[in-house]
Length: 59
Image (cartoon, rainbow, N blue to C red; front, side, top):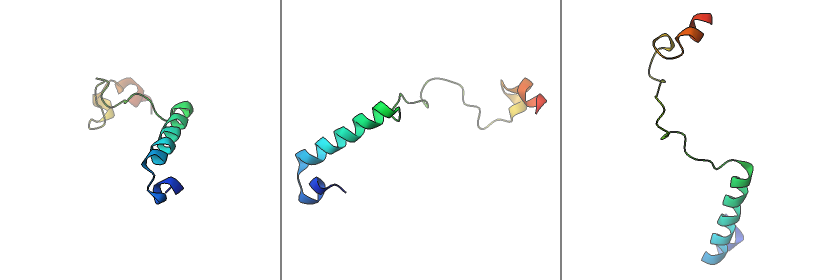
């Protein structure tokens, strides 16, 4: 918890949160969501029954 948050300074808290968000964007930790990109979901399928069939056969 920041000192601004403990003191109840809403403006200070907002400023700190904006700085953290900017730093995370600069580091690449904030990116477009990947789970709604329209790609097919394969995690509930056996690998041999997906687009990874050929790869799976070599493993």
